[in-house]
Length: 470
Image (cartoon, rainbow, N blue to C red; front, side, top):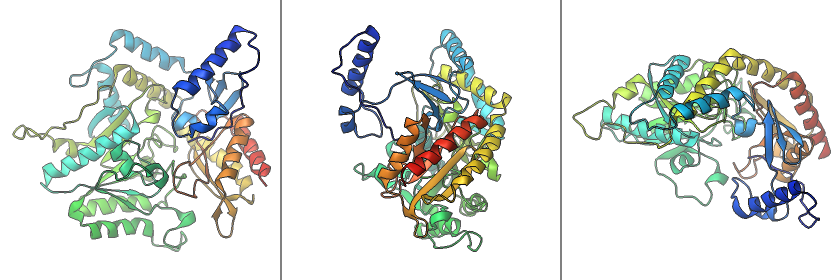
């Protein structure tokens, strides 16, 4: 969630020109008609939300003509930047050729995209399309449960995820999500979802220090499997880097250890790469940073750079083959999505991936992410900066009121820092609506086309914002 600081609009001023009348009309319609996500609307009675009208590259322009550097890529998705006419052209051409047909049959863009994804992932397997990361994860959970039922005849149904992780907002995906504020008032949720401690070195739940620990954040998951009964656990789902929960980067040993645990107990390993996919962490896919191969991968956001809705659940071939049994009328995957794999979305995705490859954006993310991290190092001595974490073009700055005790900086001050940056023309994020009292991590995840000048602007405005709250 992005905190906003919106300038009040005086609706009582004389209406002098048609454009101003139109602006007032749109503002009124917004407040009267739209239910915006992740925000308390009471404030919109005083201050209507900003409206963005244009965008190009790393920048968006609001209805008053003010330009902002988008330091979070929309919702961490506009990997190739805004205003790519070649993406619009790809979608338009496909809409003219074949606007829609469900994948109970087939069409060329979906076929080509599925093949391309498997090529990039170096997978022998299958691709199932949906519209969002939430739906991709729902699909993975259903596949995992059915897979075990049809290979072992077992009641493996439990899904293990980590505290602070976000996996979506549909009821199953929200059940995997372990952020108390997002779950509040929607419980009870779907049974069978368990949560374990994250690999959070800055606030190690085991009281250890990296370098003198045994990676208990991983080994403790094996203890959970044993105590729950391995025969009941279907899958473990993790983001390579916990993103919305505060950019929590695991120790290098962590993901290989998870792979070993899953192999030892016959558990499927699902990587949620909704944020980390398509170059964000400095490789085409996040798991490639650690050289660990999952059984299933969920993809969204960067798959189209946010230009159209699309997501994918990719499985290894042995999982797909468990669904091949004509003697059992319930053995096929009984799950359909009206818009999943839409021709325009898949055609656009192919062009998006072409841009990512041609412009070497994963390499660019690694290079510029390292530059941005080095520049942010100048903030490490600031009294409010407790920890800076990064991987590629995904960076988190944890703010504290006291460096010794690691007491989190109060939410109003964190919000004021985000708002100051917005006033100064730089959009940054924070881990809002996660854990009570711990929404204190600033998030920077700009488009992968970021320049040094753009990075310098982010750092400069962030310094000003931090100093404004002392």
